[in-house]
Image (tube, rainbow, N blue to C red; front, side, top):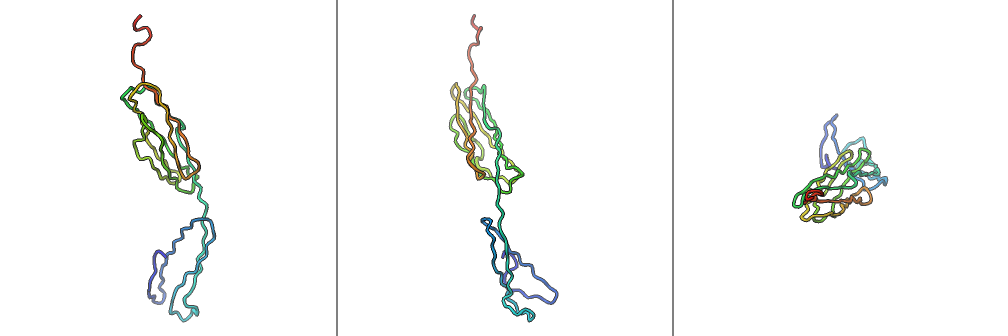
Amino acid sequence: VTSGEGPFSLQPGQSKLIIVQFTPQDTTLYSRPLGITHNASNQPANPYVVVVKGSGRRLTVSIEVAPTSILFENVPVNGSQMKWVTILNPASSTGNLSGSLSGLSIPFDLPGNNNFAIGPGGSFQIPVRFLPVAQGEFKGQITVTHNGGDPIIIPVVGRTAIFGPRRGDFD
């Protein structure tokens, strides 16, 4: 009982709203008595018992991630470039999607809030940054851990810009 509990008196023709909340943990059928103690002469049973029944529904949670891989190209040494990962809980889901992103190390970074909680039909964007301090190609991966199934791996590649003489500059 979330509202309307406790002692009360009613005059003829009056009513009282009693709110009962049901938060099932699974799809089991639940049945519980709710007793209302009274002084009414037309009801022999005291307390008057109302049987409250309900069952949960199975929640389905789905996830869509875009892009499925990230490529940073021509980023200057000591520069940076930002890209975004979008996490989507499709409208067909009936439950909230929650999880987090992890797994990157220098020269990559996840500078924002890496945790997400998204209702059906909602989305969340998370920034991914490449900050190279040396020239070359760098690889990493983002692990998306979530309550919609197995973790999702997003490969990340970063390539620095190449500076220096171009072919034919010193001919």
